[in-house]
Length: 422
View 1 (tube, rainbow, N blue to C red):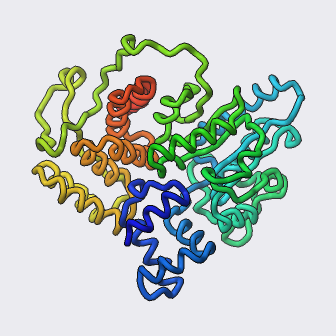
View 2 (view 1 turned 60 degrees about the vertical axis):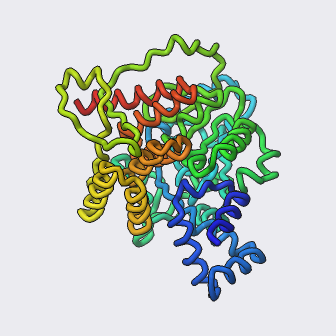
View 3 (view 1 turned 180 degrees about the vertical axis):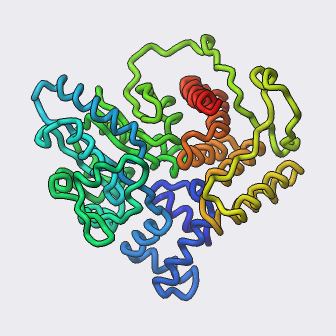
């Protein structure tokens, strides 16, 4: 029965269920089944077929938005500079056009507006369109009222300039709120997007990681159709490799994840010499344990050594850390199926984490499931853009597929992390 829901989600929104896990789908179905008062899974399936409202509710139950203001702050610093340069080239012929999709509850498009105002750009010189598949989150975004969880990190001075306190919440002022045009649309099946003008900046971050490869290619065609020839595409950290393999090049600003059309001649593959960096590389788990032979620091710089176990995040519970240690021990003893089952249990009980997704990537890698491994490593980088082991593993996969530019960039990111930590 679960397979029917899986196929429906793929047809409806292009979702690859491996990106969130079968346990997440099962949990969402049971949640909506109870809420709808359906007697069992079969009854809920019948209800789903005849109710567009319930279809939307199930999509929203499984695609949980996770966003906040000025997420990836480096990208908004770059946005201000790119906007000024683009306006200069337009020479007053028209305002700057920017789109955010999916816009979720509005933090991203509103951050775009605030970043442009802070860059000294008059509000009459730009417009921002924002689309999301969920009517509920669009209505939330239009209201412009946010709780404390929407404000994270050290850069919070914008809160005083653009928000007013309303009890425990904060209300965005009209100057910013009125600059965003919100609408409902599905990136993969939206006639409204086909009629949109080309945009100077397209923000589409952390969406493609939920799609399988054919759906990713379909989505990229839509994004390319929206992007002006000289425009910039802002993505998430886990999608960077996908961009470089589809005719886009990174702008070159660390942690900005900004891409433009690559109009330079392609480099011959034989000229590529990946930098040697002390980043561990995992052997096939299904064939041999992940051992840790003792090597000197000098040797480690010139010799590939097996992967280190992912460190649990600082805020992870002791129980979750012990579970990760158990997964490592199972994998090291060749019990890959048990290790994968333990990962699935941890996902179901505690939700996704960089550690769990990293181990699922290693296990998929060892089983020869390159596409699944690539998706898991991208999910790691979605949670932790600095995860050196995931960067290195994903770089190897991209290089094996011929994406040398993407592999080079990931290795450089991993190398910068090593230098910063050293």
